Image (tube, rainbow, N blue to C red; front, side, top):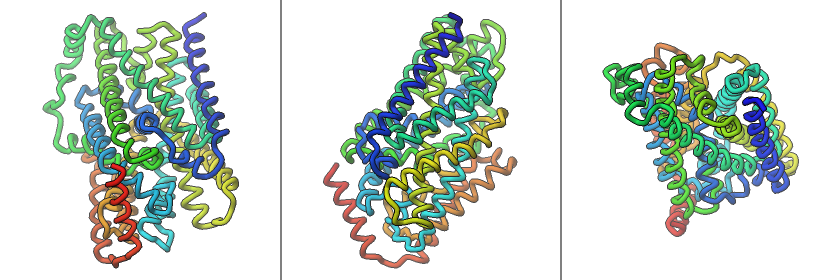
Length: 494
């Protein structure tokens, strides 16, 4: 058997397993809450790894190693910012959001939570949130499809568009039928696969490059500054831009929706430990993979056609073709876990926050689940059209969408959980100005090269939301009672 056949066999086994999980989840899905939130029944391990897998996407195995391979460990500041942001997200948002979404009319999406929490009778919060989710997630899903196309091109020499269609077809199928449960269970398996692969590649790679000392010498031979976390070329603005990626966590709907689905508040602490441990080791593995790749090509000559494929190439060099195929499945795991999570959140926003709010409030759950599945299909097609250009950078697409969500939702989520005086008008104003600021800033090259768009977007959203809320605040006893109830339950469950 040729190398490609072994690797393709491993990929096929993996894809069939994902479809099987999708079918199992389809059988267990009986109503809209099951489809959108898994019946709030996730355990800590599934919650932690599914949140991590949904978060990291192809960026962890392609974008980050590629950036470090090209520019050195100065790019690790993004990973440092993300780790800090993820920890604070688990600590500050997870417990309160789990309780508040249930207390506040059993909300099953972020927009419906904000609508119920702020008593927004205009429905503008739901509609604005749904539109923001639709716009930025379409870009996000597109980035995953680009990664999938590049994966099949680099691994098997398949046409980019063929790979894009294969990855998109499988992930859309299991998301379409299995809903949130399928997404969470597959993310758990994918998180484990990614973790093992990211540890295995650099560990075995060190044997190939002569151990730690020879590897470091080879890297320095390429560029003495490659191992410098604070090179002379690093500006304060660049450092702030990198670390500021951590701000994005508070506003990522596909990540914080996991907090709403965990079984109880007590389990958020265990989930936090599992999730952050997984994240630190996985990010370190991605960094080490890139550095081992630099050393290997310095010692053996040759160069990478696409630096974002360093993990793929090293896996093929290091392992038996079937094992390399499992390593390659980790790339698919990263890509597919994020696409599926984003599709289900986009679907829930379209159904729960736009369709039900504007058109049809009285249909059956069966009808809404059908509409949700159609929404998954439509968003997938639009994202596929955007991803058709193979020259799109995975990291650029991800950074744009990440900033949009962080700027639009991050400050509003935090204020809604900790500040009683946030009003619906403050939330709407902050959300829209934050999203628009991030969108425009991200499209102007001279601005985005100076400072990552999440920074101005987050600040503008926060300031506008606070100022407008103070101008429009009127005491509402229902909101006060609900806030007190949330804090009481939180204290009891802890």
